[in-house]
Image 1: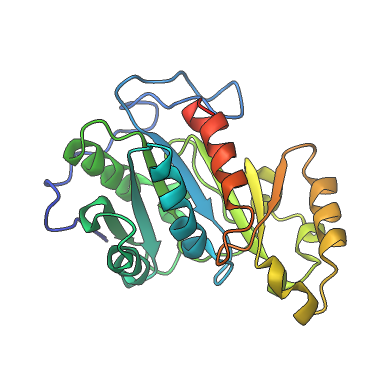
Image 2 (image 1 turned 180 degrees about the vertical axis):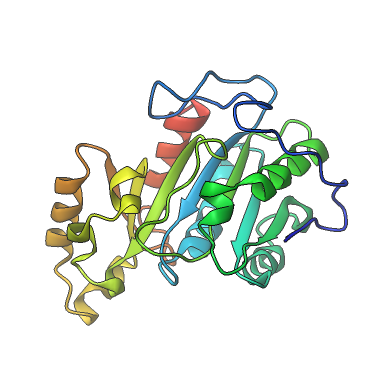
Length: 238
């Protein structure tokens, strides 16, 4: 279930599909028109251990350094581990991080029934006027994980080289449909027998021109490029 931070206001009634806040446009032309009052909402999904939280930790100071007013909603199965990690990090005010407990099916609360996450986003917008960006981190799932466009305007799927260089060739919906595919933990490639250039080539081959960025979230490699994509595609800035 969704647990607001103690400093957050009571949950608002989430909008029904097609109602409520106007979604900001993203990579496609069929995602609505920008709202002057609503924060853009992006998703970051991917398998367990691919580095979703590490990527968010790396992105927060980069985006804040560019003047972006942001907040985060995490999703875990039955804990608030990722939210507490971010709150302790010192990278963002604890009140700007909310947690949703997704239960046994993490994809349900970001795709089939995202109302808990939508309500968390609404709470953050009410608590922080002028909020520009809300990042929704999914619970660790499999290659079939995708985000509902009722929840987010644009989304990233994170895989890592330790999961195997055959992941792009398996063509899961996350790999194929995400607006940006991030191949993380590039530094591990020589240690796990992965041919990184071939993995990136395969990823680009199945993505039909959609972006692929290689990152090492721990060192910061590639993180500026991810922030650039968010700025251009979601925030409409450079």
